[in-house]
Amino acid sequence: MNWLRQNLARLVQMRRRWLGLLIGCILWVFFMWFGFWTTLLLVILAAAGYAVGRIFEADQSWKTVVDKLLSERFTDN
View 1 (cartoon, one colour):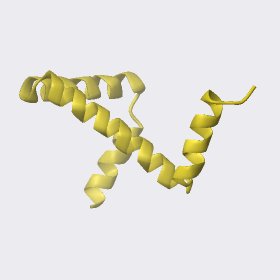
View 2: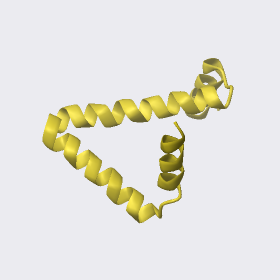
View 3: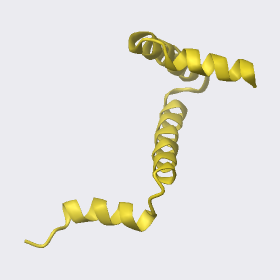
């Protein structure tokens, strides 16, 4: 567990261009291994999981988030 924590800390401290390169290479491997649509679905689900995690991390309720999203688009003028 300590090894994983050290490597994750090292990964977070990397320069953004190297982190981008690493993520690009990982996506390329997934694209070559699974195909375009599966990789695209993986990226979409990962982004959705990240968004859900951020909501739970901020201790916001779904009702508050939906109200904020809808209030910006559907306001009464």
